[in-house]
Length: 145
Image 1 (cartoon, rainbow, N blue to C red):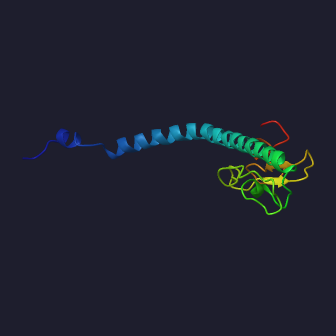
Image 2: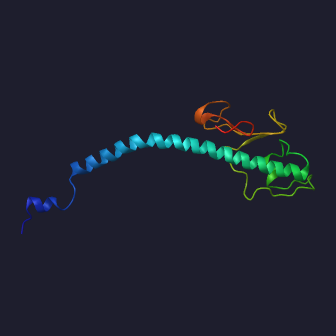
Image 3: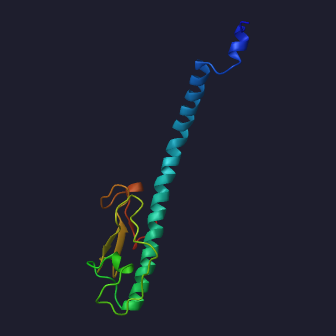
């Protein structure tokens, strides 16, 4: 028994119909993606600011126990690992290892700092000093971006 043309068509989609659906999905993605990408950049900046504030708080706890901030050579690892020359160290001050910034690079810690007892910052998306937008540096001495 041969199938009629209508019965064969009821079995699935035609190539044209699939191409139209894919075109519409592509068009929607092209309209929505730029808006979402802008939000991802802002979210990374806010994450970096929150991590810097957390690290600043733990640096203050270190200061209260030891009487000084970690030297630049000791770095942020002093928040997690006890050094031999610190008998009053009360850590570990962090439950996990010191995180990298949201762009995958280590935070920069300088002690003494130019803006206070220490400078703690991320170079932002571009990995270079300065910048604006998503490339703006995130620091412990400036307000959030």
